[in-house]
Length: 87
Image (tube, rainbow, N blue to C red; front, side, top):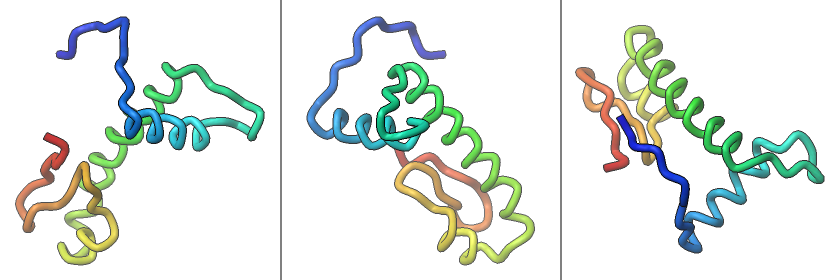
């Protein structure tokens, strides 16, 4: 389990990604959601993406799943497993 942290260091690249994620989570252009909500949304999306890959891998051909659903973070590896590509 991850440890609690009170500080998040933001590189320029991470700040840009956070800004993009904030714009996605915001309800309108003037909304500025708290970072905790943006992070919660990103985590929920990651969890749901993995669940979606599990659900569709038995329903569609592996190449179709790879073409549609693989990302830089998660992807179908052959027909046998879903792997995290993040680390």
